[in-house]
Length: 190
Ligand SMILES: CCCCCCCCCCCCCC(=O)SCCNC(=O)CCNC(=O)[C@H](O)C(C)(C)COP(=O)(O)OP(=O)(O)OC[C@H]1O[C@@H](n2cnc3c(N)ncnc32)[C@H](O)[C@@H]1OP(=O)(O)O
Image 1 (tube, rainbow, N blue to C red):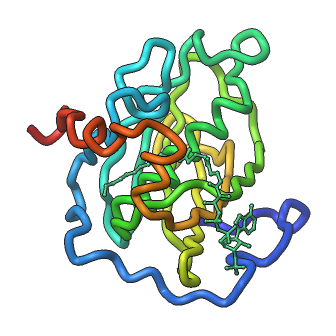
Image 2: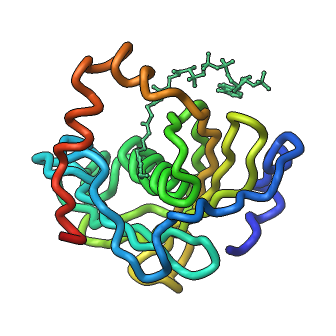
């Protein structure tokens, strides 16, 4: 992925010393279409007005996701809402972390850099990767290109995910969370 322009760079990334993110032995092979992780997820699930994102494992431990921007996703007339773009990156980054490392984690920090407007009717091609691991702290970054894998970069993002135990979801969310995760049919790789 290309470097951010100097004027847009903030702190070094990852911000702490990290180890290389060795992909889990069971990480999906390149070319695999990645499963919906939860069918009620706003990012990838079958939710009205949701982002309906689909992701594929790429070469070199990159995860490729697509977000097709519709009228349901507008902020200004004809343009994607920045918060929903951030959501799309949260999903893409989370998918990279979850599928490559296979460690349950939640977003602790998400930083976005909006470089170009993203019009309704366009598709954002997002490429995400895991940059480093420091204990429970998992660092990932992504960039989104307009209209094609080699389109203009419209958005960049980077995030810290923090590994959690599965009780995070049952304690703070739904006591039946694990059952609900498991009940989500694999709609892509039946
Ligand atoms: C395999 C299947 C595939 C699955 C695919 C899945 C796709 C998923 C796609 C879905 C994607 C959508 C995903 C979503 O939407 S996830 C939903 C949005 N996120 C949340 O709800 C998270 C809410 N926050 C928390 O629960 C807690 O704060 C967490 C768990 C994050 C940490 O609380 P905890 O008490 O456990 O730990 P700690 O506080 O000791 O912190 C631990 C370390 O982390 C560092 N730290 C923490 N926060 C920050 C920060 N902001 N900046 C910098 N550093 C931060 C902290 O300094 C410490 O470092 P150190 O002192 O140890 O050095």
